Image (cartoon, helix red, strand yellow):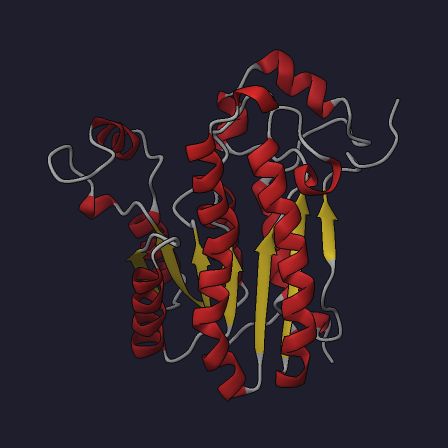
Length: 277
């Protein structure tokens, strides 16, 4: 076997792909040869202050380049790959089913699923956590991954091959101060990953999770610099990771090189989970 990541002939569906980690994942899979469907709740051409539920925030996000679903798809096409930009709310099973159906119809299959869509804006100590946001985080971060995996499962079983990569977090393994809902959903992702690995193995489907640490996404750079420095200093490498570090690990797990790896939570964290002083 050649020691190279070659995803030629594979079709990937990446959720939450309009920016940050999801965008990096989609581009990396395309560079490795895959065709890619990018699913996100925000799509540039469908954002307007008059029609979108996000209102003026959506307009600002588009103007500042924070929504890049369609532009990422176009960038992939310029590589010579096929690509789709699909509006999809992962909490809506009908929208998820439609996104998967369109991917199969236009790209031929769904061989790879990257469950990246998530929320990370519900921050507050436990007594201040809001029940409605707790429920929303469960729906998006955990049930959303369940919905997407269940929608692609029959297609992967039929082909006898599949790769599912779920996005966990060190908050799910270490806990997160002020992140009760987020930490809980990411811990749940690890349990879902192991179960899908056990059930998928007989059908040629592997399922693994990425456990990111401090990654220099747009959200990180918009956060409090003092707090960012404190968090980075907890890592062994004393620096934040880059979205490409996550994307590289995902491309590997989706390749034949990782064909005997399943059910793992792969830390891509700069050693933040280690005892550092």
